[in-house]
Image (cartoon, rainbow, N blue to C red; front, side, top):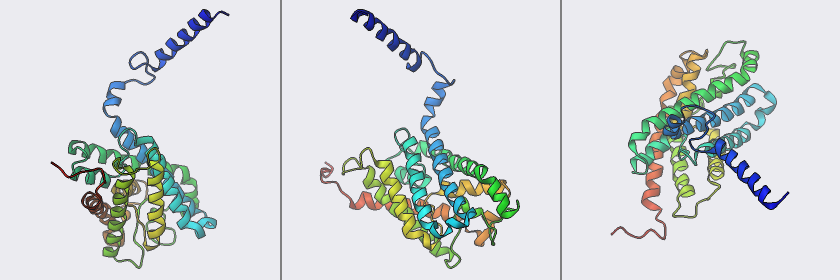
Length: 290
């Protein structure tokens, strides 16, 4: 076959690929313009759902398989860190990969994210965590039924609500738990800025991995004090799911209405953590304003 014939065949194949990949020529799914318009919110939803599913499944495995209980801290730390990494790989190049209302709010407070997008991002993250909880429950439902006989409990020896939402350590009073959540989200957002700040020496190309490692480190060093979620959507979304999936109102009323702590404290911690970075960490090539 001549070189000219080969060239014609390659050109035809290229045209066929363009017909499938072109911006307007062919789309597998409809409503592309609408999906493109809301792509950031969709990415936040999918990323949040993915990390929530993996994370909740890791806790379910520990809760429902006694042989894993002795290594629960290591399993939870590694799995939640890896779960966040997977969620970020799906969303960081699109929406920025917030996956956390506290991160979204803190960036908006310091003028690094438009306020008009804040409600949509937060709603997407909340719905993603709700959906991720539902998916994790669906995967493990048979095991839940075998464990508690179908009677869902928030407290007691057959409690399983902690698989999805955070609850305080029995020795930790509310304000201690509040400070724990505040600290964890503060250090998360402080270090997170250094990882992604292009003016510094960011982990370029490996940001999701480093953020996941940061989540693992925080979890391993603080989870012995009680549940630490560092993310209002990651706690409230699953808690809402619990209330409609058989656990009733107890996930909200348990431990003297503890539910507000992992919702409010991370917001404050994120603002303080981002503020510390903005105030104290000044890149060498960032001269004074003129």
